[in-house]
Each structure stands twice: as structure tokens, then as C-alpha cells.
Image (cartoon, rainbow, N blue to C red; front, side, top):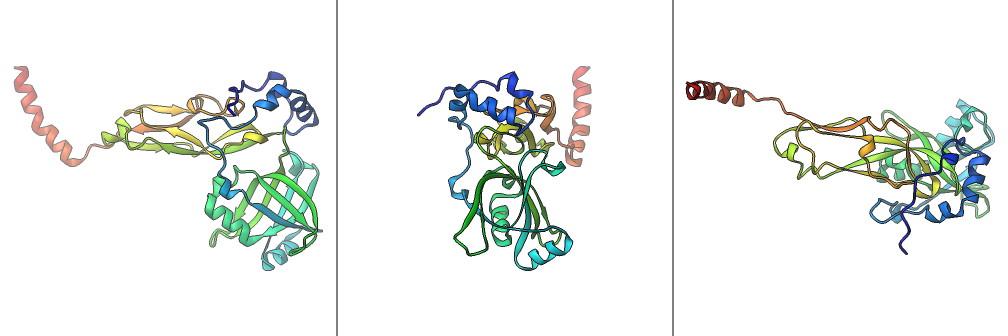
Length: 271
């Protein structure tokens, strides 16, 4: 079913604290807005093949020794925060997730793409148990990897039930470079940003944003305000922040020699 193109979030919602009861209630009361919070045709949506449930078990305590024991047992120390600023004192649940599962997801999706995707997190009483303590929809907030092996050292999640607003660094995917006039002339692509932060309703967090380079010529650029996204997403950074630019290439020695040879001809033609 085709959905009407959603309008921007009402100003009353834009000023609410993220994941606050007021924001959640306001969104819940706005039934018209809720009906529009779905992925629209032409915009990227999460690939269903990566819709995996992350398994977790409760963790009673934190600290370096506890974390080291968890990693030795093949688990990654994790936290599920209740709200956007949960790390500053909000409610949280200490859990551990399986190292192999997190490593596989990060490898398949990519680091930035992993942090821009919602997952179901299923907390079970213990590994291998069928007893489910809690099942939540959550967004990975951060993940730390070992500098040498890329093994996940810890990962944090934030609860993302329907109606919540989340700050998300959305990865950028560049397309149209094969037909860009500037790149065809030998200019270089100067990638300034690889992710852009948006305020997103939990229901429609895009897996990535496409950046079309097909019309860019030498010296031209795209800024954050040029990005085409779902109307319900709100850009957090300034609209004029540069994303990518087609920079003129350096003149080679061969080209310089040719220019010197052409110079006398130009001077003679002027006479």
C-alpha cells in the first residue's frame, strides 16, 4: 500500500527531550503522524536478511575483572540503556552478548552500518536456555573493537520502542561516480563525510543514505542539506556542512610540457 508522503515532525515534537515520556506520549497521540511513519518508496530500507535476534544473558556486576572473565568465556560485556542519556544515570540493564554473533554482524554489515540498524535483543536466563527474561527492540549505540584483532570488546545498546526519537549517524553510500562529469575529466573525489547525524523516529531509521554524484562537475560539492531523506528525519548538523567535493586533479609533468609547447603558438596567433 502506498503511503502519503510524510510531513516534517511537528515543532512541538522537535523541542522534546529525546526518549522522554513527553516525546513518547506526544507521538502516541498523533495518530496521523504514526500512520505515516513507514519507509517510503524510493528510500533505502533495512535488508531483511540481516534481521537477526541478538542473544544476551544477564550480568550481575561490572568492572575490569568481570569484563575479562566474560571475554574469556566468549561473551562481550554489554549494557542496554533506557534512554538517550542513560550513560549519565538513566536506567540500564547489564548483559553480555555472544562474541561470535556480534563479530559476524559487524563483519557482514560494516562498522557504521551496524550502528545504524535496529535489532531485537533477547535476554535469556542463561546461554542455551529457552527462558526469555525480556525481549527489546534496541539500537547499537557504540562498539569498541580490539585494535589488533577487531574482536568486539564491549557494546552498548539503547532501547528503541515505537514512538521514540534517536540520534543516529547514518552511513553515506556514494553512487553515480561512473558518470560524474568532473570525475570523467580526471578530477578526484574528496569525501569529507562518511556519516551524517539525523534525529530519527525509531520506526524508520534508514540503513544508509545515497549520495548521487552523477551531476557533479569539477569544483562542485554537495552539502548536508542536499541529502534526500525521509521527510520525518531531522538533520542535526548545519545544512551547509560539506559532504563531498569534486576536486581538480594536479597537472602532470607531461601536461606541463604540452602547455609550454602550446604557449608560443598562442602568442603567435595573437600577433
